[in-house]
Figure 1 (cartoon, one colour):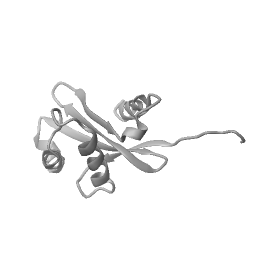
Figure 2: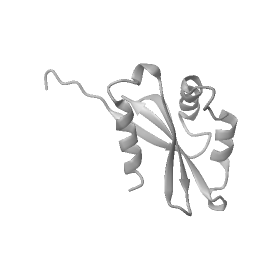
Figure 3: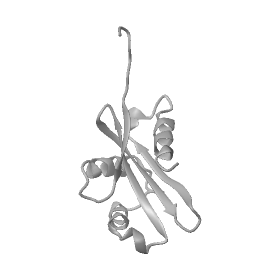
Figure 4: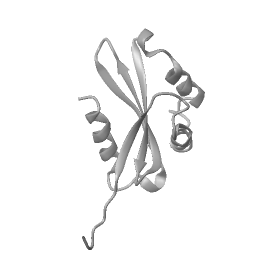
Length: 114
């Protein structure tokens, strides 16, 4: 099809620190999140490694992709008793923060838990 411009957005759940692309996504988070609201990356990794069954909440991390390239990290917290999801962070490389790309990833993430 001539004159076609296409992009492929994707998200992938990170379940352990050894997941492929976790370090790349975490690096983007670390470089783009303002220091006054940033959670220490060691703390994020700590909560990712904890047994989910024993905690009243669950940390959910996602690597964000555009055209098969890691461009960001999303972090959500699920409060089990309240059945509530809190969107903690959505960190994207600066060059991808245009044309409302945030909405695409938020929409993709929310559909995972419907």
